[in-house]
Picture 1 (tube, rainbow, N blue to C red):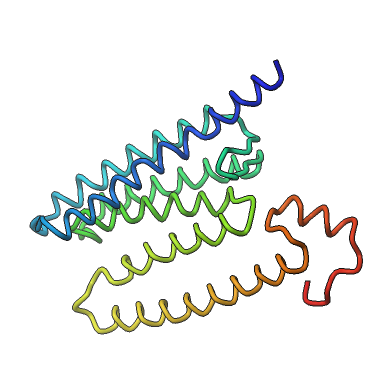
Picture 2 (picture 1 turned 60 degrees about the vertical axis):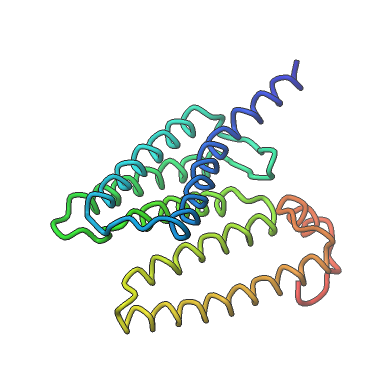
Amino acid sequence: MTDNITFYNLVVGFVPEMFLGFWCSFFLVGFLVHARYLAAPKTPLYGSIANHICIGLVLIYGLLIYQSPTEITTFSGLHSTFFIYTIRLLLVFIFVLFLIYLQVEKKPAFIEHQPYFLMLISFAALHGILMSSNFINLFIFIELYSVTIYYLVLNRRNSVRTSEAAFKYFVIGSFSSAVLLFGMMLIYLATGTTVYSDLALICVIVSDLPVYF
């Protein structure tokens, strides 16, 4: 009976991530098709429609989070506690308010639809960072978040200041990722694991770790 309850909690806990992951994958494929075959006109209507779609998807995602268990470890290694559960719901609320602000302001920040969908992908990556239970997931979600931010920074391609900011962000982000990956490698060489819970246990029971650990 306990095994059945655990399996049920795993499935229910993974539903929000499957929902958001499906739509993010759908929009990524849409970007590739749009860039290769389509050329939609740059009108505020497209940005407004994309904004409303993102608001609806994020609200559904928040509802799925609310209905899921507060403490769960999913099949993909994503882990949630009551604290992370609360932070996820808070991020949903903040992101919806941000999208509403972009919609009601007099001068739209984006007139194309791609930036809104990229913000949705960065939102999903941010949740992945929060729920990561090992360094591998953490690094993947950080890089996914960085890639979407690169494009958002480069939204105004004709601006010299925008190009300069994007280049600086790319250089600093690449250096930071390299340092982060190097640190993860040292921890793995010292402990043989990248899982947070295992690292916490090792820190408690082992006292002769290398100096750099």
